[in-house]
Image (cartoon, rainbow over all chains, first blue to last red; front, side):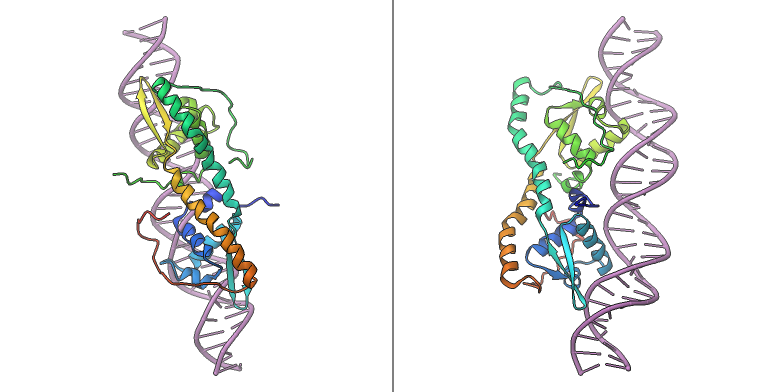
Length: 122
Length: 122
DNA sequence: TTGATTTAACACCTTTTGGTTATATGTCAA
DNA sequence: TTGACATATAACCAAAAGGTGTTAAATCAA
């Protein structure tokens, strides 16, 4: 049941949500405080928090009449793994381009996977 | 004119687009080859390629009747910088939680920026 | 030249996203 | 107990996202 309803990549796609995360990096905050940093309505911020929560990037707990949100950066490792995929490749890519001028296809192997499935692909 | 129409974060938000990037990491490919790896229509893939192109993650050049696409991983540094923002913070966050049990707010400084502007915020 | 291949450009459709307002509900402080 | 405060929830909306199919144009190979 660790299956997050919302994808991490999709969660950080929105600039407002990224700013919320940066805000929570400094420490946990109640909704009212969070929304005071944005020009949009509190309701809109709550929706963003729900999306971040679905991606397990934040969690909220009631404290009196407030709901305090806290950051959980762990799911961001998936993002890290993704861009590192290209970090390793960057040098070998460059090599290919230099070798054969990069004007024609290089490999073109087959696999035909199909992205329709839900298979936690990074 | 380096102003990308599409945000890098938003570009990599879609799983199909991430797979396209992984595909192009192995070498440049024409549209027909790329779309052969997906269950969706060629038209859909072209739209994805346009979005990736707007984010300057790929570029395409005509070669005969084919259009060859090539990866440009550079914009992903922005993603990396974002991710690292939380890695630095992770230890100090943990420290805070341990120190005061994390049941109450920690800092709550003000800034009120407003995310409406186009200001290249990571 | 003709036909197959590959991309380009539309028009169209459905669902999701990001936002709004209005109306409860629960909680602290006098 | 009465406000004021903080969150919750519902109904609604416009625009964007992700997809489809159709048609046209360019190019390579016979």
